[in-house]
Amino acid sequence: MSETAEGVRAARADRTAFRDLRLEIEEFHFDYADALERGEVEQWCEFFTDDAFYCIVARDNHDSGLPLGLVYCEGKGMLKDRAFALRNTEMYAPRYLNLQIANVRVHEVSGATIRAEANYLLVETLVEEPSRIQQVGKYYDLFERVEGRLLIRERRCVYDSVVINNCLVFPV
Amino acid sequence: MSETAEGVRAARADRTAFRDLRLEIEEFHFDYADALERGEVEQWCEFFTDDAFYCIVARDNHDSGLPLGLVYCEGKGMLKDRAFALRNTEMYAPRYLNLQIANVRVHEVSGATIRAEANYLLVETLVEEPSRIQQVGKYYDLFERVEGRLLIRERRCVYDSVVINNCLVFPV
Amino acid sequence: MSETAEGVRAARADRTAFRDLRLEIEEFHFDYADALERGEVEQWCEFFTDDAFYCIVARDNHDSGLPLGLVYCEGKGMLKDRAFALRNTEMYAPRYLNLQIANVRVHEVSGATIRAEANYLLVETLVEEPSRIQQVGKYYDLFERVEGRLLIRERRCVYDSVVINNCLVFPV
Picture 1 (cartoon, helix red, strand yellow):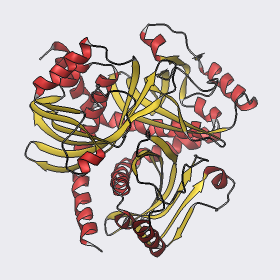
Picture 2 (cartoon, rainbow over the protein chains, first blue to last red):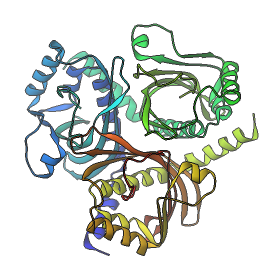
Picture 3 (cartoon, one colour):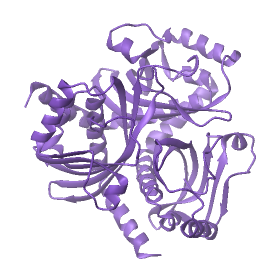
């Protein structure tokens, strides 16, 4: 058996130990998705630490190590700016969003920091149009436990979808 | 931090306590989805209490407080009528259904009653056509524990999808 | 209440006992999906036992008891052949894959063997095209515990999707 497979096995043993953490992160994601689905962007900011990093990057850029993305926020201030802008401008047609977060995997725990991944599937519905996949991708996350609860310190949203039907101003 | 965020935090602490319940409800959902995917509508009725309420409502109607929906059942009798009708008429072209239920959130336990939510994604496949999203939405549920097992006492299926490709006779 | 419903209830009681196993299988699936999403087909082989059976069959064939499928592998050797062929030929346009595995249900444990099911949803994204559902279906699985970890001894991928947009050479 290859070393890679060996590594995978060891990693899997770790992940079993990480089960409670996985379940807790799932619950975090479900609250997070709900806030976005309801358009509560101010509440969305409260899922992040003050020094949080957040970006949305295409998979080909991410794989090539290019940081260029659709959205790029350093610090909660920039997240709040974005939330404010979203709340006070209407740059996009009204739509409903449904955000499924699945395949949560915990990779590493180091002190108060947790490295994890998840798949996301964002389905949008515009008036008079069938529901469609707006974006599909992966979250690469660093969580931090602050006063007992989890917060995102770093979230890289890496999307497969090359053609996105409209300017992607809304966060995932 | 705002009172809302404070409230969210308190709610989250509750939800951690509700973990076992969340996992049990997931298992309930997966059985429920399987019955519908196999077209076993009579079996579907057995997931409800005798006095169950069940409806399928568009998100804009739900948000406006309008009860008007595609489907509206009060009591298991009406559910069984629906199941019987589905079994004995063929108002729609044959299709395969695949029902993914995700993002399960437990909000409140009060005696034998549990208030919970979930996301659902119904993918349908007609002969000679690509698989497509037929409906995406949320379940707003009240479960009741009867003789040890969970049953649905109230299920509001609130769908984002405004345009549904055919008369929506089949339950979700 | 019908005997079927009685049977369902008994089965559900079993499944509650199977909770840890369900969570472990979910973690298995999430690693499995990740390997395929990254195109690591050699690593994909390592999720199977040496004598594993693997096939991809249309739902109508499966329901009619017809074994005829798109893919049919007996033994790890055939899986490795397939992995090698995928690695060394380019029969399909480049695309990104996103594989959501949900609705995991454990049905039976018999010695080291576990019978389980799951839903899968494969979303593909080709260059310059919107993300679309490539395939949706169910896994019918037999897992075996070998030296503490789970491996697939038998996986039947039964897909609803009748029209698949390209020759389905890639495994799910």
